[in-house]
Amino acid sequence: MEELIAKRYVKALLSVIGTEEKAKTAELLEGIAAAMGEAKVKQIIDSPIVSGNDKVELLIASLGQDADNKLVNFIKVIGEKKRLDLIPAISKVMNALIQKESNMYEGVIKSRTQLDEASIENLEATMNRYTGSQIKLKQVESDLDGLRVSVDDLGIEVNFSKERVKDQLIDFIKKSL
Image (cartoon, rainbow, N blue to C red):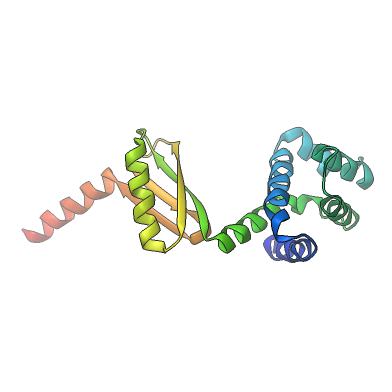
């Protein structure tokens, strides 16, 4: 439900900003969304004691002096409608829309061991051929005994687990006997 409402706000925002302003606006919204993920900021935004105007002014002040008037007005409107908590969802929807328009996506590689740059580039090239999109992968360490590549905005997840391969090999041997 939250995502549907966020899509409407993104559509409204994109109707007033230019094409060249999309990336900057998305970056600023992403920064606000990241700040809203911190406990102190979230506590202020969720607090019924702090007035709506103070919350809006706090977010506008975080944009700095050179903030675009359209984005400032957008935040004011969201504040008036008591929807400031939607900013992370709005940021996520806007980033997904920009990625879709540019056909460039970001993905994550999760693995216990660090992959070298050539292996990551090989995975990117394979994913590019498979999807027809430009995919940039970044690696995150995890306790996974294998490799997981995911591109959330495309709904792609590839998982290679040593345990799974071992189980499949044992099942194959059992069936062949």
